[in-house]
Image 1 (spheres, helix red, strand yellow):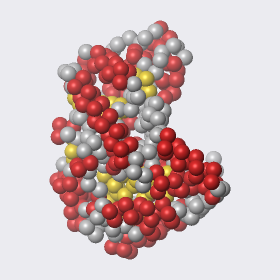
Image 2: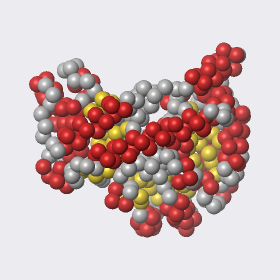
Image 3: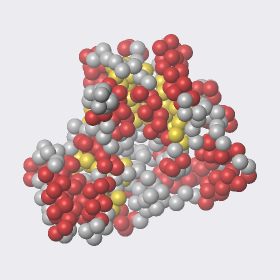
Image 4: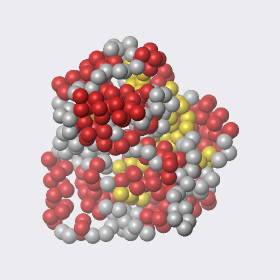
Amino acid sequence: MRQNIVHPGAGELHYEIRGIVDFAQQLEKTGIKITWENIGDPVAKGEPVPEWIREIVAQEVLKSSDSYGYSPTKGLPAARKFIAADRSKQGTKLPAGSILFFNGLGDAINKIYTWLNPGARVLGPNPAYPTHSAMEAAHGSSAHLTYQLDPAKGWLPDVADVRRKVAANPDVAGLLIINPDNPTGMVYPRPVLEGFVKIAQEYKLFLIADEIYANLTYDKANFVSLGALADGVPTLIMRGLSKEVPWPGSRCGWVEFYNRDADPAFDRYVRSIEEAKMTEVCSTTLPQAVLPAILGDKRYEAHLESRRRKYARRAAEAREILSSSSMLQMVEPKGAFYLAVTFQPELIKRGANRPAANAKAQKLLDKALENIPANSFDKRFCHQLMASTGICVVPLTTGFNSSAQGFRMTLLESDDATFTATLEAIKDFCS
């Protein structure tokens, strides 16, 4: 090309959650049935959307043509007012004008990092949800800066270590928190969140909290929104419909801006995000139109509680089965619908050289392993596990920017027996 048209951060864009699907589809052609544990789509795993929610959506579509048209750029006034009123009930002041809708949080994450000054970096968790880590790394044209989540301490971060990293790197302008966490299912305790707020105050940082799983914390009393603790710190909080309704295909998420007037640079940054959204006209209209009716329905809390109980039960079962293996380490999740498993040194040293389920699959596996470095044990493990058992999980290192070797799976399987069998098969594979 006459000019180099490749963005300097293009090499940082990785999404192993979907990338591993190519290998799985090749294995399917050899006759192996794949158990899809790679992606957090409740609908794809057989979880039904309640009939009353589908009726609300259907009635909205049929009653008029309004939901087929554009919405205001920031979002439908009724949806924004509902969210603001809900925050007020929780004791948090949030003007409706401080809410901006997006086509899912992937869209929001893209804009938040794209319109950040190229020299400003955001320090995020390790492991990290790949959309955040990849977009932040691409924005900075170098590896994502991280603080450690420690599996030996329930995946909690060391706030003192976060402070040291902020002090040592003047490029850090913001801190990212994913709460409840993906991939670990950890829920940040109030004192830890308060520690992040204090660091932000001391170093004049802004905060980002991805709270897409806020209503799927198993014990509601354990969850504290960062919006309630921000204490004057410029803060962005992300929420959405995709996981809790569940309606991932709606592509409906929003960002809540707190303390926008606390710093003129933050205010201008937020305005740039709004202006970027304006160039797209608006976000999806139908989900916004039905949001107040769904989230405000008296049946909604019972719907959430039923799901929370299911995931809590699954998390306990997973801990019981997987922790019984001397080769695996697992911290029981407290929210969302994922679990992260790390490997004991003995397993990494010994290897997981189980044969594939058939000869054709073995050839595919051998070819795939040729292209995976020997020190990427968890990625090799995930390919070997899939070729042998058909279970598709995601490696932590390449999938979640993790320094800990392991894998993530979901708690979403709709059939109890299948979920138990999947856990037992993973344990047996590691024995």
